[in-house]
Amino acid sequence: MITLVLLGSFAVLLILGIPISVSLGVSSILALLASGLGLGMIATNVFAAISKFVLLAIPFFIVAGNIMEKTGISHRLINLAQAFVGHKRGGLPIVCVIVSCFFAAISGSGPATVAALGPIIIPAMVKAGYKASHTAALIAITGAIGVIIPPSTSMVIYASITGVSVGKMFMAGIIPGILMGTLLAIEFIRETKKDNIIMLPKASNSERWISLKEALAGLMMPVIILGGIYGGIFTPTEAAAVSAVYGLLVGVFIYKNVTLKMLYKIFVDSVAQSGVIMYIIACASLFAWVINVAGIGNLVQNAIVQFADGNWIVFMIIVNVTLLIAGCFIDVVSSFYIFTPIFYPIALQMGYDPILLGIVMVMNTAIGLATPPVGANLYVACSIADVSVLDISKRILGLVIVSVIALLLVTYIPQITLFLPGLMK
Amino acid sequence: MKKYLRNPEEFLAAIALLFMTLIAFINVIARYCFTSSISFTEELVTKMFVLISLFGAAIAAKRRSHLGLTLITDSLPERTRKYVVGSGYILSAIFSIVLMYLGAKMTIYEFSVGQLTAGMQWPEWIFGIYVPIGAAFIAFRFIMEAIKLFTNRDTKQEGNEV
Image: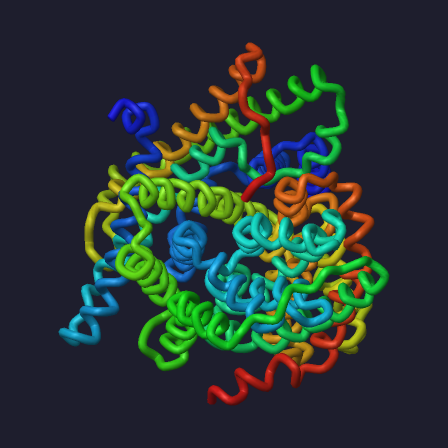
């Protein structure tokens, strides 16, 4: 009964276009009322869900990303990549992938990557002869690599739920992210073989040198973040704060283009963007709590364990299929809060590495960012490229398939993911 | 100045986030340069985080940037869509009012038993009160958006930007 109320009301509210956070919250309240458990714990739950030091990395990384975007670092990164590979066949798509990886390493967020790079890359690619909808599809999905390449807010969330090390998660994401990027670039170049593409003239060595110098401050950012975390100098949350302050200093003293008014806007925007995420976190953790106290989690776990019958290959198929389907309807944060408490204990029981499970979940939800109907990246890319969701959806199919192949490789060949964190010991 | 007064949550949250970022940064510097960290700051910024998160949700309500599944509502005819979306805002406001009420109850409880925070030993209610205050702002912003929709004073396009 309580299951029906919880999931039924959630589905109805979601379909009616109610914000995901509110849908999660209202269905939790209805389920609690139906079960007679009372609402006494809700406020405490909301407070506790947000006030975690690890999660503070989210607004800090968002600030850092916004600063980097507003100070023009994204533009400089694109110039750099173009100077080096722009003259090659398929150069621009490769630029798109490389820069996404790099920018993602700064902002830690998928939609933010698309919003920052899209306005620059999409017009450039359309001018070179690529179709707008195809280009938008590419940037929507390469922006998703943003949450796989560290630092990543998704990894922070997974770590805060399970207690695994954020640093190890970050390390583990590097190779899977590069793998997915490489496959995407190859597939896109294959798909556009017949398009009439104009290539950029080859950049001279001095042009390359200038673009490198210009982008250096931006290139240093991931080095500082990752170096600082692995060097044991600061925690991931502090790394996020350091990168925000670093971005600010670069903007003020090196690029000299930060005004007080701009700074105010950066911080208000960052508050609003993290507010969306944190409100979902508050409500999703409430929802996950109801799932737990109502015994739904246990029920589902037992069913999965029985079905998988001790076979981790089957178990991971269930994980992937569930998350890919869920990713089409709910957002990344909710996915983590709802499914991690269910999958994590089973993975531990089966001896499947929890870090690897985390990366698999991050990749799944990343692909979800770029799949219709609820793909945040997709909507951002659509509005930038001025194409319809339907157009972009048709174009993105091949790229999604390639991403799923990358996902399966990562799922079933643990060494891809665990090689780098293994070196940390 | 008027702009800041009309959007008090924007102003307060932006200042608070700047403050939190700097505190976390200074903490790293302090630990390495003076080998002493200001440990209580961790608890302070973590609790302030609740306020800026809820204020952020209020700003997002005003900007209509809360994530949702809009595929179905987008395909409705303009008039119907307006009422569906507006009703959604009303429901969102009601949820926030419930949260405000429960948060107020929690704060009163914390005050009455004299609960202290774990690290700084400050009264817990001065942080607990963030929940009802934040929820009140969220409710207000959702109601304003619903009124704008229903009274045709709608100038914005609701979007899905994040």
